[in-house]
Length: 313
Image 1: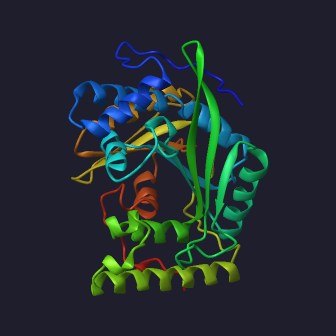
Image 2: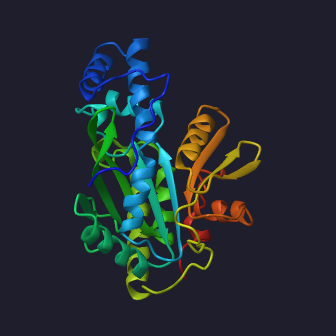
């Protein structure tokens, strides 16, 4: 499947081929302070930002539920470089998660159904199914994590790129947000437990226990709906929302101009005091802050609410 729009070349373009990006990745491993290397890697990141439109068109092909919250984020350059430093063996051009979509569904059944549609309707997808079986480390997290591959035009060539889709219910989403509050242990998947102290091990056991409680509840209540999840009124609309550390927030709709939305997102990400987020399908700023405080606590700079406030009864 090929992209429906070419890459918009920039005057600041710093690379001409995939090979150049691959070589820059290797050079970064040897000399992480080389500014030329940073320019090449950041230019490739900007290229991937321009792939969001294609990613959205593929996401729409899999027919998301009518009531769903779809958000997207672009992996920050520092996060990309950190991943390389922490042992990632491939090139930045092979990274699956530079562009990531999160699909928060109104119910467990809706998440299951949408995950199956991704598998059936996006033949170039690779799906990790945590809905039907327990996570490999004993956590009850239930979700679909899909990697979708497509070819994106670039100059007179095509780049093979990937993006990630995470599909989960609201309760699974909140558990994952809470899990992120554990920092590095969460990023490493809570493996190598022999390295952790007693307090950390207690946290991990609590995470496992609560995730299993949620999984059991959802299997028994698959149609229980979270009414705060909005109707996907315009799946072609892209909007950028943001919060800062003072709690101020903003919302800018770009309609179908995904390039403008991507540029807005990139501009806001460069500001240290702002957390931007690309939303899909949200056309009205009314009650947006309330929604994001409920569904994206980290984005809204409100911390990670303890499970006693959001666990199902």
